Image (cartoon, rainbow, N blue to C red; front, side, top):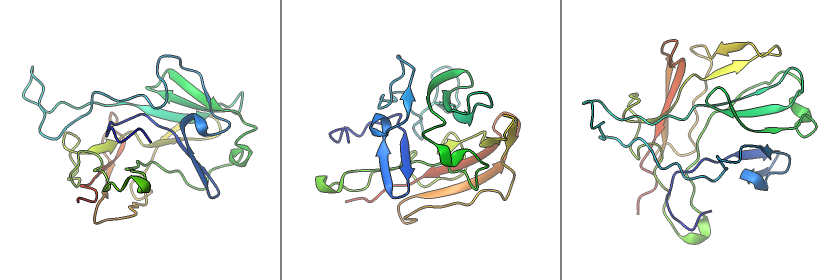
Length: 194
């Protein structure tokens, strides 16, 4: 999508029935934050083996994102951290989401256009996950909101792990950790080399 620059980027993927689109090419999503665009390169990323120059601990870069349906407007809001709105989907666009969800998905994607003849890129740290945040890509505080916008952590046993190619990418359900990390999942993989 970006000329093969290999940069980690903030992106939005929307899939309805058999149609998939990315970022602002998706009809309906309204991006409202002027300083944090979709497609923005994420320049500070955690790398396995990197350490902080101040402490002898791994340097971990985190980006907190969440979305929920506003009880008053019924629009679906996308936030970075807990209080910075990035954009929203108007209720009219996501009419099928007016009732309770049957399932939720968290995920990532490693992608190279097939016409470029490139191998599959690595995901997370580029290594298979071992269940340690300083070594793996991860999602934490995996939670859901109910109709009244009440927050609930995902419980142990509530997640189904999926990888479309376990030879290249894997996921570990780390379960509920603590109040700061909540439910956590780790991912990574070498991708298709060569």
